[in-house]
Image (tube, rainbow, N blue to C red; front, side, top):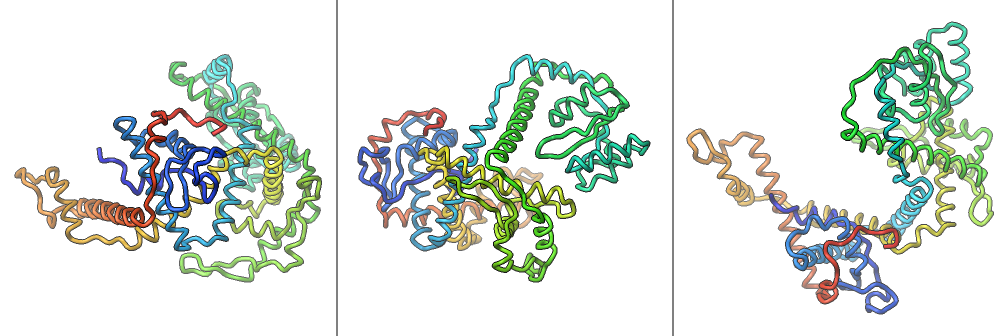
Length: 486
């Protein structure tokens, strides 16, 4: 099996490197330095962080595996340093990316602290779920984003309206199947509050309104139950345990959201939904997407930008606000899903969640969750990775082309497997198009690796990395998993 290409290894390495600090001198105030690359340093903690996640890629004796990993880290740092030297990413963008990364790391730490993914699940709970899954239920549901609509749907059904037709009429979000018909569902498949109805609800009876916090409101009607054949308990118990853990974490997350909403007095202002809706539906500008002009809302006026949509208690007791200007910026972030603009309750939920993210960040900072060294390194790592990716695309991918000799070399590497009916290698020109394309792709990959090696070799001659071999030898291998304090 061919080793993982150098470029892929470098891009996969996630580490944070300390820049221009006392660590460069290797003083006792910080972790020891394993390597200096120009004015940057790779510390023992950097190495251990990466090794705990990537050591399976490095085989051989402990000394050779450690040396290979450190060599890759040095190459990675050479490329990152070159990206900074050339200004491929502006200092302002780097500062912005670092702030975003620090916020993301702190928020993840808060979630892990308040709603851990490894919440305990007892053997008895797993066994009980297994027993419940001996039966499956044919169920219909009505889903609405708010209680009032769910209560209205319940009243109509109680007065004789068809359940399926009502489910379709109230399916404003498009989240339920036609007629609200889920078919036969096994316990443990849906969210816990609905699982309870599936397991215990009397057939033919309409249950609800049932709230699933952060989701909405449901009506459930079980049509029938029937036995089902199960796999042996030992075979499915890990899957059942994981499902129970996820359900418990979901409950914890919902509780955290409610508690933060209460603790920080998160309140959506009257008219906020309508203001945001009006802003979304008033396109006056266009942007180019794939060569096409797409209408977008014009930039808000200064007065509109200042309009408060949500209020909350900010840091150190100061009032906090989420404005229309903030919302416009968040809606432009492609990594964050927007609301369903045809359903007002989802706009309300989106606004609350946007404010809750800010509130959660305040709480994470109050707990100083982003200040632990490992988390600070993780935040810096995200910026380093962006710099590395930009440098790789600019200095390696873009300028690399392949020659006929590159393709011929790829062909010769596989000629022994490219045989015709006479047992002789098929000429390259007579190969099928898919095989030729695969050989050209491999040739390009090898050319890029060659280009990357030429780049890192050249940078190494300029920067002259200093490796502290004696410190590397003292490090353990394999490296134990990273703990919360590292």
